[in-house]
Amino acid sequence: MPSPPRKHRFSPERRRALELLASSSGGVNAALLVHIHGFKRHVLARLVQRKLAAAEREVAMPGGHDVEVVRIRITAAGRKALAGED
Image (cartoon, rainbow, N blue to C red; front, side):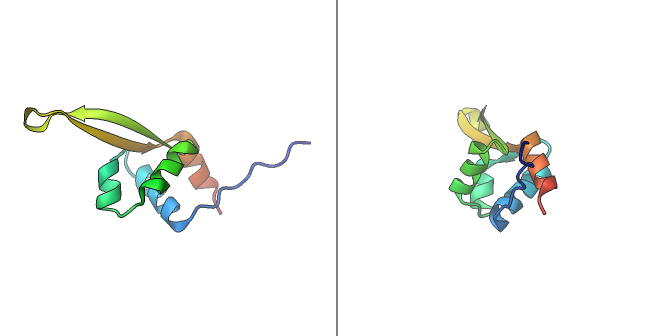
């Protein structure tokens, strides 16, 4: 008999990160998550590793100069895990 699905237990920081990502339909610039919202890079990396969030690289051209930007967005699995948490 298969075991019941595991419920995710997130640290307060991971939960806050997922909630912030869930509130943004287009994702959030990773640098803003670190420097403005105070998330640690390893927390964001762990969400991506667990496929609860996805990181996408973009190239922006402010003032004619190429700047690489990483945007992080919540995945369907992340939304499901956040909704199923106690």
